[in-house]
Amino acid sequence: MKYLIKLHEYRCIKRKMSSFKIHLWENTMFVNSGPKSDGTGLQFNISLMLSIKPPSKPRKINMCRKPQDTIDMFLERIKLKLSSDYVLKTQNIGKTEIELQKDGIRVCDDATLSDIFENNNSTTCLLIRDMYINVVYNAPILNNIKLNKPSYEKLMLYPYGFDNGFNVSSTHINYLWYRITPKKQEIEVGCQMAYTPTAEDIDCCLKLVCKPYNEKGSPGPTAEILSSKVLKNTIDIYPHENRLKERDYNQSIRVISYNILAGGYTKTKEAELDMYPYCSKEVLASGYRNPLVLKELIAYKADIICLQEVESSFFNSELQPLLKLYMNMNGVFLRKNNHRREGLSCFYSIDKFTLLNQFDIKLNDLTTVESYCGSIVNDIIDDEFWKIGLKKTTVFQVLVLELKCDTKHLLLICNTHLISDPEGDSTRLMQSLIELTIINQIKKKLDIDYPERNKSIIFCGDFNSTPESGVYDLATNLLLPEKHRNDNLLNNLKNVLDFKLESAYGIDVEYSNYTQSFFGLLDYIYFTNQHLEVIQTLPMPPHDVVTKHVGLPSLLFPSDHLALIADLKLK
Image 1 (cartoon, rainbow, N blue to C red):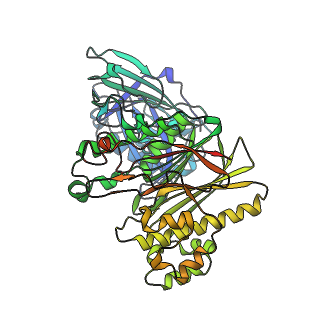
Image 2 (cartoon, rainbow, N blue to C red):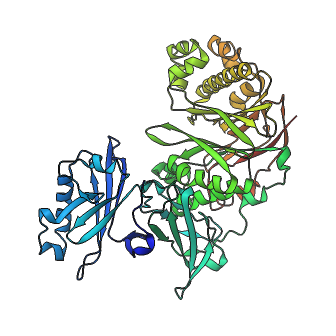
Image 3 (cartoon, rainbow, N blue to C red):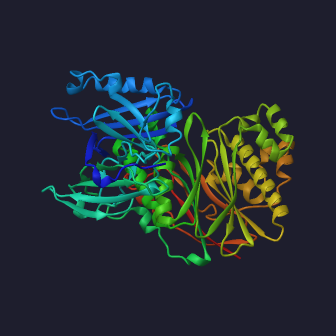
């Protein structure tokens, strides 16, 4: 990666795209290699800015070219693009008036773009008549980043959409936030990726200026984006703020399990008419719910976060960078399948834990499941009743974490989201048995690899199972429901389990999911109590607050589920 220009020698050219502007460098051609939009191979993404003499304005050209294109084809394409310019249209560019030079020597026409652009350790420039255009390789380029709309007082505002650019990471950008007053004055108000608007920002727009750098510290063009006017927030205190409790950070492990409601499930007719008819489109929109989810997660100050119904875009663009920024957490994501954009994610404190291993398991991947459960998987598949559990797109995460303050102790952090079929109690029972068996096998392997270390299991998730449905008794007492108690297949799975789990909240909680049509306890934080015990659980919100707007989600709550938060400690 080589930069051939000095920023102070060039004035900026602005390109406007909605509220987004990029300050491109004059007489510069940016060349970035990247995958095609269809994923079938690589291409060169080329942006060229020319400062043409009046009466023409500076001209920007965008192209995507194949690596095997010849230089002759490339130059002809540029000539074609320029032919629409008024000045150049009346003065045809001759073949000898445009060329690509490398170290001052003209590149031959039959060379390929791959020959020139992939070996970029030399000085390259494009010459068009008397104009010299410097070529910059693999610069960090921001491309149409966005801010949530509308903007609300007290709710975090941050950019997303970095994946639209080239060689850009949200962690390698200098950020500056400005409040634009009614008199068009710009007052600096923040210098981090995210900014939480205050009362002073109400009815003002905010401007974010981003200066990207690559991993070597070389800069790219500055970009800026303008927010919508900040709206007054009518909520003085969100319910999660009343749930907060102090804890001894060094002596406790705070764990969250939370189904945050994937945005895709709020945009269907079923959601609008049957599931959440009491909830306005503005409140259901990701622009309102996502910042509220982040506000809530950051407020809890957890060490381990297990989330369900996480959309991949939300994980990559918002959760991952912002939880790293504010809580120094790393996250891992597991998508359900190629047809669903949502899945599971686990976050853990970098200060407290070292990630030793992770297991991403899809229950319909029979080869993987058989490697943990053995040949009994074939018996399940042959059984018309039970095989449904291995046909669903259920996924399952297991992380092996080492405590930095006590390296003799390992934690198995498990995260799941069982199927939501109202008639699927038996299927969920089978799925939970399979997952418990997998945990058991991973723990046995750890006993062999780390014989001197204690191992504890923390099993979080949306089990879609009320306490009386069978899964709770299986997890806590290794008991099968009476109607399945003599089922040989289930017993063969159950009998290999050598641990029982305890529920951090017990079953005294009336519900963790509350909508107009259903409420019940579906979410759990299970753990093995040999080496762990509960210090405290954070109280659930009062019922009158949950039902203030009929059900969940609402103006007060971003999801149709409530977060479970437990503080555990080593015995």
